[in-house]
Length: 125
Image 1 (cartoon, rainbow, N blue to C red):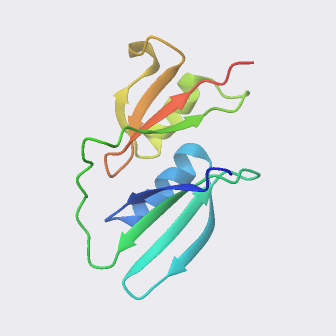
Image 2: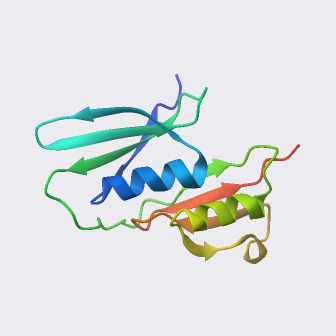
């Protein structure tokens, strides 16, 4: 078995797709249009696990996050520091939420345009 994807509902798919592309260098793997919803699958080249963004047609408001969901974690490549990755995510439209200097380890958190938390993990050598 392997992890296939994590699904996030979105009311602003274009903004969310652009954020994950620009903040974390993801690419659109595929898009599936249905009558009442559209699925956007994003991921990193060479990796199988993806983020699925689900847009229910006509639902343009942000969804409540609930108390059970925590965060998505994305690890930096070896050649990009945690600070650089954090700045890239904020410049791409992420909320400056918990920068590296406020976290007690090699990680930081941004919020994507819909308010989902994304943990950025520094890759250790």
